[in-house]
Image (cartoon, rainbow, N blue to C red; front, side, top):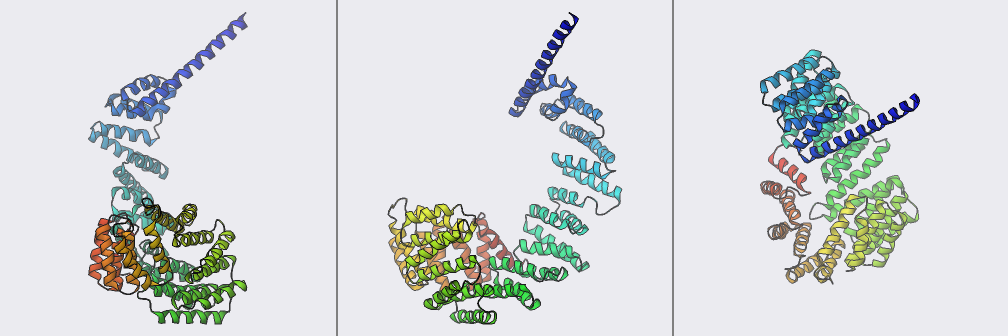
Length: 606
């Protein structure tokens, strides 16, 4: 009988415990719901009941304290903080909460006294300092972070202690000079710290003035300690961030020699400069490798890229000088004669063929050169695929559309889900566009919008939008069909004929959505021909009459480039870039315009 009674008692006790647990969880849920809705009076009722059970305190503490503070119930808030401090006296968090609560209660003097006492109590060990620092940072109390870290540094008697934490704190307090000094100090402690500092600087350097301060500090430190690689590495990083490749060259060269890199990084930086169209700087990088490492494998890479950089410079300097093209072909041929027809010279073979086809009207010879390279199996599979794309382009120059699409399609099949395959598909899409087959073009383009290569995806999106904008009201795309023929003529280097057609289209479709495209294309053609004033007239028309459309920023940016690069009118270019930065702050050309403006203003010598 006793056993039976005990059994009943235990079961009843278990039921009560389960019921209590369920009630507790339900109360927590309701309190949380009221808290999230900002209904603090109702939340307080539940938190008060829950706080009577000591097991709940840790769970409800943060929300309960916030609730009391929001309701300005500072008496109960103080009691809650003191209870937690008593339970965990070694934790700085609850004491910091108490100091913050006093601040909220407008007891500033008492709050400051408490903060100072916290700093005094937790300044002695690195572990306690970091624990307090992390919580102060979480609460956004950066002034007290600074005081804590500086006080703790005095205790350690080490100038370098807590440099990274102090730098991050100064970043939040916008004390830029101190922030930079601490980051540089931290970087100099250990080679492994440099990448950490770069990451933090990337996040915290925003204004142009901040970059200038960093440069000043690094140059000063480098003058004091010219053998210290840290300052060279950070200066190199800074110049690359600013795309000041000519300045980056000096630091890159120093690091190349120090770490015996045999030019590999110089080649990488040269390619980056070339991608950013700084051909003078890219040539400088490649020329250094050619002269410094004539017996290394990097010599062959650098020599190829040096000629490629010169080629890009010649093709982007208007009007293009045919003699320069011929001299470049001679250099490529010299390289091929010297090294033979193989993987090393494949890019030279390609470049030579394309220059002959597009600039010297030697299309048949160009086709023979590429066919020989393909037949002999020179180069990698990727290079062979690229040669087929090049052949397709040359056949398009000749107006042999079928041959072009056949070659592009071969590459699509050869290199599925590969940048070359995407490039071939884009070529096929453009071919359909040139022929006025817009639906077929869009089919290709829709696939390419998801391409992993950002440049190809962007090109696909731009062409797709052009087709969409000009076939919505006119389903036949009458104006676009004529304009697409002009774009084919431009691709085929029939500039005079293209310009004549554009002039006709400008009159015929002056109220169409294509108006800005027509004017912009005219401006770019005039620039290629060296007719810079005519180019400016058309680009200014786009900017003034279609400035809010998609090509408004393009037109104004290129006006600045024409004044700067072609007419050498630096003051006018500076004026345009300055206005550009105000009017088109979200443009993709914004960073480049800012850099050009600052160079012209004399902020730094590139």
